[in-house]
Amino acid sequence: MTPRAALALLRQRTRSDFRLGVYVVFGALAVLILLPIAFVRLAQGTALHAAVDFAIVGFIVGATVHAWRGGNLDRLGVVVAFAVASGGCLVATISPAGLYWLYPIVMAIAFMVRPRISIPLYAGVILWLVIEGNALAQTGQPLAALAAIIVNGVFAMIFAERTSERRVQLEQLATLDALTGAENRRALETELEIAIAGFRRDARPVALAVLDLDHFKTINDRFGHDEGDRVLQRFVQLVQVSVRRTDRLYRYGGEEFVLLLPVTDELGLQLAMSHLRSQIRNGLAVRGEPVTVSIGGAILRPGERREAWFARADDALYRAKQAGRNRLEIDGAD
Image (cartoon, rainbow, N blue to C red; front, side, top):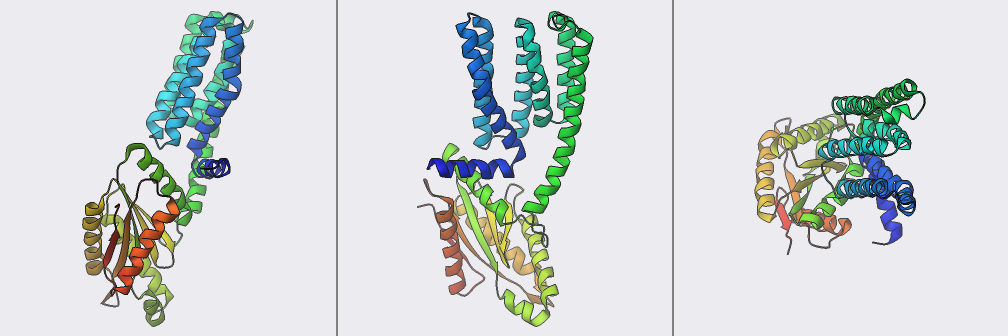
């Protein structure tokens, strides 16, 4: 991947995933700010302080890489929040000036974890500072310094919660199809990249299926677009109750949809899509006339890019249509 393409992917993923963006920014700040400070402290002979700084930088960078590669951000957030809070307390103990690092740490924690985690962590930090005492005493105004950390944490939590609520609303507007409630094409492009990254990491098979309702234009022409819209909504409902919770459905355009199925090989895709076709055939109708679906599938190949993977699934769909519709065609991994 070229540097330009890598930068474009970075911008796309951080824009679409706020929490991933927090980790990327956190990792960048650790490398650009904390790492040089660690080298300066090492040169000044404060080896213990430098070692703590190096450990914190290494941990943050490792967490950022793990987040980028598709790690569970909920579990990762708890681990990172606990680690940076502990590191901040340790730095404040080693050097009174380290107390000031707790201010950005408190803010970062608010964006990494929910209040039920951040509040006990904040309480632990405050308790440690009170018991240790020296870091606060060195400021000359221990109560003011302690109050400032508490106020900083409270406002950070409030801002993080409000931002999270707003972000969820905006993400729904940006990634959900207004008519059917399925995720949209924009969300699909991001998730395909994440699925490919996961496949490169652990080599677990992942499948893609392109679904197209048969003779949908005829439905619109005969019964009107309102009836066509109801068919699309009912179709999405049937798909969502017929597949696994881990499978993701996207509306690609018109009557065409895409299913992303993690940890699914060719046999698994064959069984899942055959079941889905049966559910659609038996559960979807317009004015008593059954509606069927044609499906093209593809298993991701090693080294394959998103465009080529999708093109194989789309070609398989075309073959299904050409062979008479209401069929499944799969382009396997080999």
